[in-house]
Structures are given as C-alpha cells and as structure tokens.
Length: 467
Image 1 (cartoon, rainbow, N blue to C red):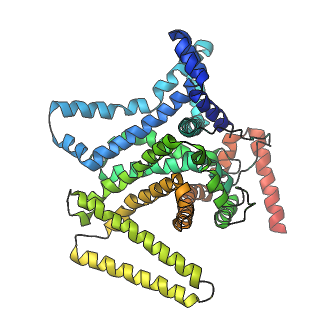
Image 2 (image 1 turned 120 degrees about the vertical axis):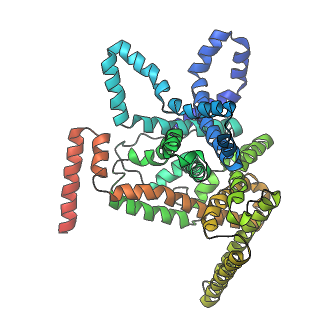
Image 3 (image 1 turned 180 degrees about the vertical axis):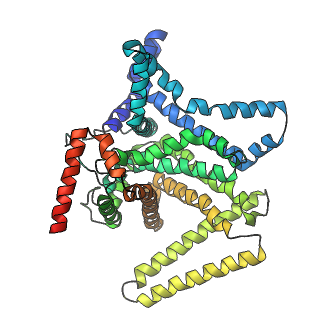
C-alpha cells in the first residue's frame, strides 16, 4: 500500500501543471536532475514492464500469424540477421546489465570480490524476486493514475511486521496489480510454446523466455515467499477456506471489502467512475488485447481446416454467445427451481449436458473438429470473456440498470475463483512438499529467531496433539 500511495502520487505529479511548467522552463541538465529525482524513476519502471509486454505480445503475433515460420523457412541473409538480433536479446533480459552499476559501485567502496559476494548473497536472499514484484506495484498504480487520475491516501498502518497474512488478504491487495497480469503473461508464454516453431527447440525457448517466466513466477509467488509461515500446510488449507467464504459472501449495504468479494470488486472500479471520456476509451482499447488470443488461436484449431477466412473468426463468436446463453439458462433455473423444485433444476442441467454431448458428436462427425480443439479453444475464449468483463466495467453506468449487469457480476466472480485457484495451486504444492516451510523461515529470519520459531511450533503442536 505504501508503494501504491507513492506511485499514485507521482502519477498525479505527471498530470499536474507544476511539472509541465518546470519542464518548459528548466534547462536540459536541470531537467534531467528533476526527472530522475521525481517522476522519472516511476516512468522508467513503467517503461521496463511495458517493454516486456510489447516483446511478448510481439512474439505471440509472430508465432500465430505465421511470420515467424516464414522467416525461419527462408534462407536469406536478411532473415538470418533478424533472427540473430531477436535471439540475442535474452542476454540483456538476464538483468546483468542493470545490476552492473551496483556491482561497480560496491567494488569501488568495498573491493571487487566483496562486491561479487554481496551480489551473490542478495540473489540467495531472493532480493531479485522482491524487486521484480515491487516493480509491478509501481507500474500498476503509476500507470493507472496517469490514465485515470484518482490518487488517494492509503492507510498503511504501523502493525507488527512478523505476522502471517491470509491468502484472501493477499489476493485483495495484489489480484489486479500482479496476479491477473502474471496469468496473462504466463498464458502468452504457454500459447507461444505450443504454436511457435522456435519453441520446438527447448534450449532456444528457455533462453528466450527465462526472464519472462521469472517475472511471472515473481508476481505470483512473492507475496507468499515473504509471508511468515507462508508455506505452512494447515494455514494454507484454512486460508483457502477463508478465501472461498469471502468470494461467496454477499453481505449487505454495510459490508466491507474485507468481508465481501462483491464490495471489493466494486471498490476496484472506483478509478473508472471518476475518469473522463478519454480515460474510458483508452481503457477499452487496452482491454481489446484479450480478443487477440481468440483471433490468433481459432485459425490453429482443427475445425478451421487451415482456412484463413475472416468468417472463421466471426463464427467463433457463436461459441461465446452459446456459452453465455447456457450460463443464463442455468442461472435462471437455479434461482427459480433450486430451492423448492429441485428436480426441475436437475432436469435443466441434464438437458444442457445432453445437448452439449450431441453438439460435440455432430462436430466430430461432420467437420474436422477433434478433441484437442476443446482444450485449445479454452486458451482462446477464456481471455475473451475476461476482456468482455473488463469492458463491461468501463460501461457500468449504462449496464448497471439492465438485466445484463447481474450476469456480469456473476461471471466476474467465477473468474476471480479461477484466478485464486491458479495462484493457490503452486502455493499448495510447495506447502505440501516437506522442508519448504523451514527453508523459508531460515531465509526470512536470522538463526536465533528461526530456532525459536521452530521450537514454538513443536511445543504448540505437541500441546494440540495431547489435547
């Protein structure tokens, strides 16, 4: 929250007339000094993350459009030079160049060997994970404030630092700023791995995307790596139960965001209510990127039969409308029949399942459809649904008074459940693995505190088992 508060404040400074006038009246060197001591740090951080986005979306376009395959199949010198340029950038991605000034400064102050040792120690203490995560925080709130304004005071408090934070609280804080963005980038990397001819060479794919995967894992796992007792199995189980209770608790008018998912979801849209027309238009344009997954992947499906006609993409929207229609029918049946006439609700579910099976059989019989298309299409249509929800949030003043808005809220709840489960899966796996909790405690705290915490866990565990 502190990083968010400072980043939002710098975003407001970018929009202020004071910075505009200073920029026009300062000479070049004083302007550089002003830039790098105020808003420049946050602007550069945002440019780094935007560069990662541009790089990954560009590689995805090259893979899905067939340009990459055509470039590799051609043996011209120009294409070989282009491939050499594209495939050498991973050296810069490793972060060695950005860490070089720090190593040089430490070597001047403490000696070269001590500077190298300090650098290695910082990596073992996962400082790169922490810094990468904080870059995401600064980028999200700085960029959002530049687009929409609305910086506000955030009460960070002065609480006890060594305190376990629940999964639901971490999700509320980092879902929109880190988790959703990490899942988006991870999905790009997965689609690229499955459709790019370059990715068929495992070493080339790893070298090309290792820093991007590091960013994805850092944005997902950092809140739990630096969370005391973050890999305790019992705490993980209790946290997931609390998260599901928070998701499904509807509450009332006076419910707080800590109690109700719906209240939190509305509070996350406050910046869209105060923004102007240009802010809404830019937000919609940014949300359109989620439709590219569908546009690129539907042509790779077996049912497309290698067709490149625009009709393939237009017909794929039938799937979206049918899925939404089925959801509306089941929701209506649940609201009307589930409580009193349960047999009718089960009958509706049965008919929907039978209809779905018949449609799949017909597609297998009369088209080039295959079972792999079912799973591949999920990579196309799930991002499209999230893009539609994001656009619906921008258009909330027009949709909230219609019957459609309740369905938008219900689908958005399902998406947050899916995001929460995707984040919880690696956390649950590491909590289940023996030794990770002790390793995390040793990394986070000094030896005396780690030993005391371990003894405390053994004593309390023995007491609970005796009772």
